[in-house]
Length: 432
Image 1 (cartoon, rainbow, N blue to C red):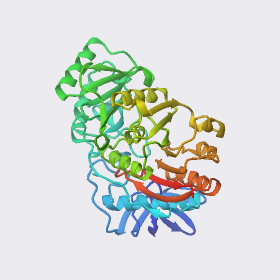
Image 2 (cartoon, rainbow, N blue to C red; image 1 turned 120 degrees about the vertical axis):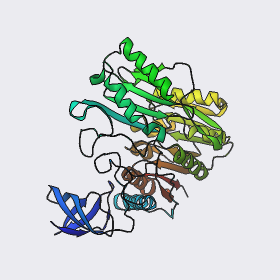
Image 3 (cartoon, helix red, strand yellow; image 1 turned 180 degrees about the vertical axis):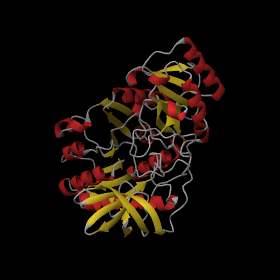
Image 4 (cartoon, rainbow, N blue to C red; image 1 turned 90 degrees about the vertical axis):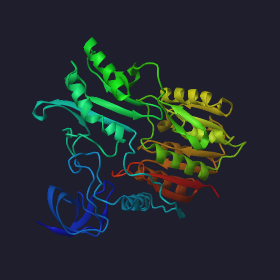
C-alpha cells in the first residue's frame, strides 16, 4: 500500500498528500503525519483513500471520544485535538479567500469557539426499523451511506438528549407507525426540549398515549409533522414552557418552532452575535439592513442598540416569528421586517428599500452573490458578512473588493460545529 506525508486538510477535513502528481484525499489523516492508505476511488486528477495506518502521528492526534466515530457520519474530526480543529478551520477560511476570491483581509480576527461537547441543540436524526439490528435505529447516517448508525448515545448532543436515544428506540419500536416514522428533529430551548416526529400515517389512540407517557416521564415536548413543515404542531403537552432561546447580553428571548432555522450551538451563537454587533457598531439614528435575517437573531440585537433596522428574509414564517419577537421584546418602534427573495435581488429592488448606513448579511450556503452585485453608488459604508460556506464568502468578497470598491477589513473563523468539517466565519468590509 502507498505511503504519504500529509500536507494539509481540505474543506471536508481529509488529509491531502500527493502520489505521482495526483492529489490524494485521505480520511482521518492529519497534517504532518506519515500514513499508509488505501484508495477506494480513483479519478484522473485525484484519489479518495481510507487511512490504513499512522506511521508517524501528529501531536494533534487524540483518541476519539465517541465509540461510534468512524462509522457515524455526524463527526469528521474527533481524532484531532479541539484547539487544533479551530486552527485548521481558520486555515481553510484563509485558503478559500485567497485561492477562490484572490482576496486577503487586512486583519485576521481571533476565532470564535466554545465547548467541544454537548453543544448541539438542534439535530435531525433518521429513524428506521431494522429487524437484523433487533428493532428501531435512531441516529445519524453512517459515513458515505444511507444506513443509520446503531447509536446508543452521542457526545455532541446535550447529555439529557443523548440519554433519550435508547428510550426513543424502544418507544418507536412499539408504535403502530414504526415503519412510517422516518425522522425525529431535536430542538433544545432554554425552557424545554422538543422532539418533532415526522409521521407518514396517523397515530392511533394507543400511540398517542404512549407519546404522552414518554413526554411526562422524560420531561420533553412532542410535536408532530404529518406532511410539510407548515403542518407541524405541538402535540403534547400543549400548554407549557415556550420553545425559545435567549441572548442575555441584549436582554432578548426569541421564540421558535422546531422546523425553524436557528443556530445549533447556543453558546457560540451568543459569541457570534456579540462579535457581529461590535464590528457593525450600530448607533442610534443609523438605518441598518439585516439581510437573510431569519427570525431576527441579529435584527433584534441591532435594534436594541437604538438604530433603526430593516430585516429582509425569504421565509414568511420566519418573518412572522421575527415580528412577534420584536413585539414581545418591546422593539416594534425601530424594527421593520419584509419578505423578499434575495437570491433574485436587483439594484432596483435594493434601492426600493431605501438607503442604509450599514448592512449585515447572513446568507445560507449559497451565499449572497446577487445581493452584493446589486449594491450601487449609495451602498452601505460598512458590511458585516456572516458566512457558513468559505467558498461562497470568498466569491462574494471578490465582488465587494474588486467591483464595489470595499476594503476587506477583517475576517475570522467561527467553530459553530466542533468535530465536523463545517466552517462558519465572519468578515467586515468598508468603503473608503
